[in-house]
Length: 226
Image (cartoon, rainbow, N blue to C red; front, side, top):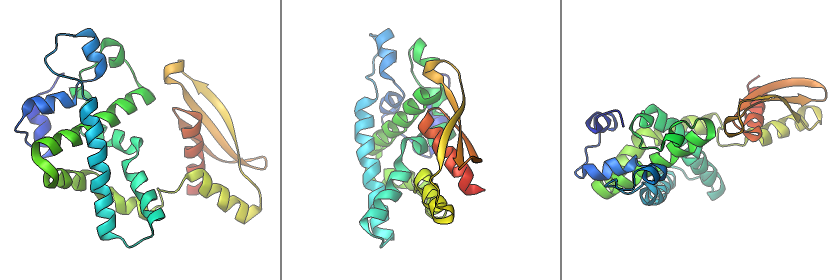
């Protein structure tokens, strides 16, 4: 914990009545394993609540503002509340600087850290809901997350890039794309993959990720962009 919570409250424009509740947002279970006498609980119950509140707010917004079929709304919602998106928002808010982590978890990077950040963001939603109730939570989610929805819809970021590229490739050339791992580096807990996507023998895109699946998606998106 290296920063004052007031600075964080100013950043998110939400000022808590219960400061201990806000502090609990940042407490990872691993920290309590090394500090059993710590006065606060870990954030997993807040995460559980925040996950449900976040989905309700996004669903409510989609229902009231779009007349699209259920399937499309579901895809849009999934794109907005997916872990990668929440992790990126957590990084924008510098949530990393406020986390209570064990010494081991403090060294974690890559996918493991992304999961911690996404979960902490959901815990923050839960805490805002408990402290400020629904309307203030809705305002926060709209300002930081739902504002990204038009770009997601416009650029079809809700569509699985691999599926999208396969459909396009089969339409244009009657060939199904194939994927090949070009390189992998790093320790097992933080391995990075480079994957190429090919039509016949021609490489048409390349992508990097913390898993083969993520790298394949990035490669497909790279091919689509080109």
